[in-house]
Length: 427
Image 1 (cartoon, helix red, strand yellow):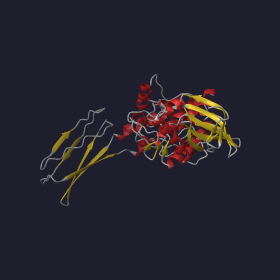
Image 2: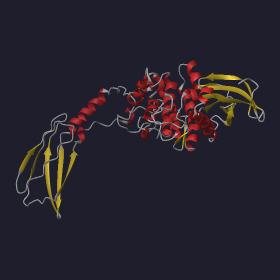
Image 3: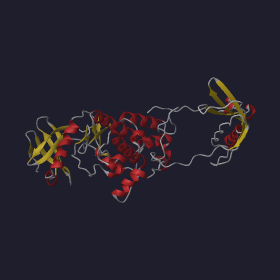
Image 4: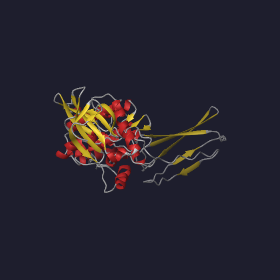
């Protein structure tokens, strides 16, 4: 290719913008639209691969099918001297990867704008049934419109449309960039959905906020093991001022169980904006992170804070008094008759007591049970019955802790409770 070469009938090449192993990108002039455009050519070596050619052409079709100011606009595609090309809008600016190579990390507000605009583009793609599968800093381009930041998502070459691999993925092949791949993407290129893109965006946000990646490895295999099972340090472990709300947001974004992640790009964006607005305070009455098992949770636990002495004493006093009296009521109902057996027991265990054995008919019985979980508890019950008990009778046991009102810690007075400062939640 040479400057001045005519591509099709309307595009004239001007100069090379960049070259790599995959191909080259040229600045060109669109003669009909009278504007500058970018032309992406596949390398001659890859052009010989039928699968690579199909993936290249499908990139243009996938991106062109989604209309969004946050997805690069595709104008045309075709073949020139046997080499596939794509004509797209010409962007002036830099990729997020270039930005992060110049600055250690972004402020939470800057990261929130990156996440917000990326989520807008992803929401449009996901609504059209397209999963990008390669969200990473290199594919997020930062430009300006009317003086404001405008992010564009690039490279839909390995996207998945409506359950079909655009890239004609072969069994056993790996699709994506290892450090930003989701756990399900590491295991298989098939069966992934939009939540895989949200995981990748979570990794991008972690990198932007902390200046480091949540996991790494010397080999691809080591990276995949870390993605699948390694604990991730909360962002605040790297940057102290980030706060609990941002930790919680990233913990949910990087859940290995995709059902525990944000369900949509819009939900993910809204939650991050709220976390940045109040970084040290979770929303009242809610949690950014759903309840999940330790297996699915990716984050390492941070040391919990120490209790205040007063709180510790109150908790000990309440616990001691709570076990001073336990009323166990066993109600046995059969054929309209009720036999009520009441027993009192004293326990020093915090575990659930062993149920009292079924009383023996026409006799007085005493039973003792011992729990061996973390401490021992003893209970003695006495029951008396004067009629046979059919085997179909049902027993229900209710354990009711009884605490004397005088034993409860006094409630703090209104003057003792410090007034809570209002925080500005605006973004």
